[in-house]
Image (cartoon, rainbow, N blue to C red; front, top):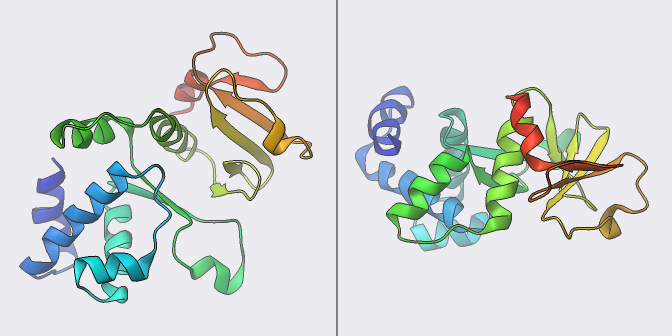
Length: 184
């Protein structure tokens, strides 16, 4: 499916030349094998031997095709047009398929965050936050983690919540991660 999207859909829609298409695939592999990729555009362009502009375009092509989610910091003006703060594979099924193809075990934290971004972004705006993981609708701060995660990182934020894996019932501002699957 990924190759069909890259080699047929993206290639035709954006009128890309054949040598550009493997770069898109390499970027997908990079995102899938990173723990929430914070892209260093200079380093990526140097390693892939293409221009910085091409890398920016590739991130946009992949996001518009539904293969990745580019998450930005909550900002205005010129800060809004910068590179994404973090990049995630669009959903956990794609993440699992890519990691399986590369015979890698997925990072639990990355899987959790990928799931959260996928589910919440279907109905809400999602941005990165300086203290927590995500800012939802420019109001609620969420920290995503396992059941032992605490409020230490977000203790000074009134509207802060924990989205926790491996808990069945929420209490206070701790919400089971699987509940966000009901948003989709």
